[in-house]
Amino acid sequence: MESLENARKPVLKVGIEDRVEPSKALVFGLQHVLAMFGATVTVPLVVGGAIGLSGSQIATMIQAVLLAMGIATLLQTTIGSRYPIVQGSSFAFIPGLIAIGSSIGMAAVQGALIVGGLIEALIGWLGIIGKVRKLFTPLVTGVTITLIGFSLADVAVNNFFNAYADPSGGTVGRAVLVGLITFLTTLFVALRGRRTRAMPVVVGALVGYAVSFPLGLVNLNLVESLPALSVPKPFPWGEPVFDLTAIVLLLFAFMVSIIESVGDYHAIATVTGSEITEGRIARGIGAEGLACSVAGFLGACGTTSYSENIGVVALTKVGSRHVVQVGAVILILLSLLPKFAGILASMPAPVLGGLTLALYGMISVTGLRLIKEKVEFNDRNTLILAASLVAGLGAPQLPPQLLESLPRLVSSILESGMAVGALTAIILERIL
Image 1 (cartoon, helix red, strand yellow):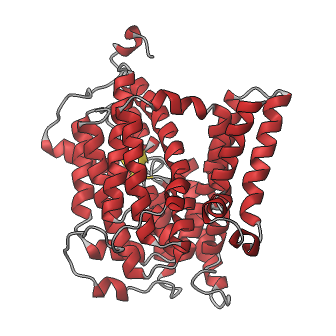
Image 2 (tube, rainbow, N blue to C red):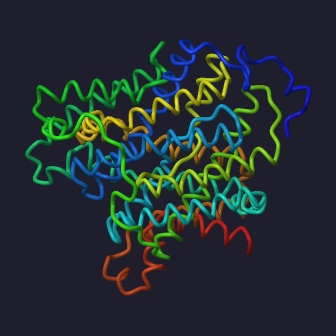
Image 3 (cartoon, rainbow, N blue to C red):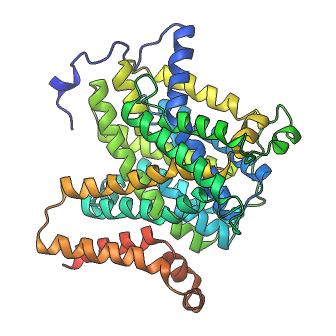
């Protein structure tokens, strides 16, 4: 827990409970939206493309995500931790969402998010968070986060070469050109940008999109067919299916999200000079779980706290949770604009490939950095790390015929490198 002396340092120009005039609140809120926007819409774009959803279905998912993340942010800043934290789509859920959506269907994704969200909420509200955190040591968390990035490598590369949309390779030359330009732009903004340095994904997407137009890779027929205004409907993928396999598979993503969020709560407490308490952590995790259930109800993706926006608070010294709530309202308003979602859904796959080539790699690097900084490399830990990474990387490569011969719950876990790696590390840490 942060010391009271440190908590009282005047590190902010605008405190957590302070309000600012509406015009400034709008600007600051929009800044939070821009900081998280690229990453949060990337999740439905990647999941929808990998599962094989149509353009209109991806647009529906984007609408649902924007609404769900706006609601999640309001929950976090009112009944949750009450920190100035923005909630966005979690990358930890992508492998599980793709696996479930491809094999069982999106209705099962809805069911798994609803049940998993309620479990996460209970973990927070009932104070179980401490016991769950003990299972996810730095070694286990590092392995799991590393494997999330590695498991998405094929998705990034397939998008880069436009392999999902054009497996014959007819557009591969144009695709690689767009992917490279997007990739290099994103890297340049992230490393050399000044005013835009906090938004490399947004800038990279805009440049990639612009380059795709003259190359004939953009089709805006979907945008023309969508209405100008509509409210996202509940259960867009049909009645939710509560499949045990899907629920268990997503629980690993929920656990990773919990650990990430607890780390973000400590980070925002440091940035704002406020005290971190078990009560705030418990309420925060409870609110996130409830938000994930809402996301399942709306047909969206799982949510987590966004570190990018903690960086915005640190940069601007504006820590008002009311400003973040303005950002949440902006997200909700954007969710009512189908044509806007259609423009995002029309983003060519090579643009996504260029954006995620480094983005997914950074997820893995984050896990490896955590291991390097927090784990002692003695013989025991080295063996656990080695076995967990190999198991997590190798299990998804098992032949489909073998996986089909196993119980569905077992085969689904084996198809998830993140789940296999996490389980291996947890078990080995307990018995060695």
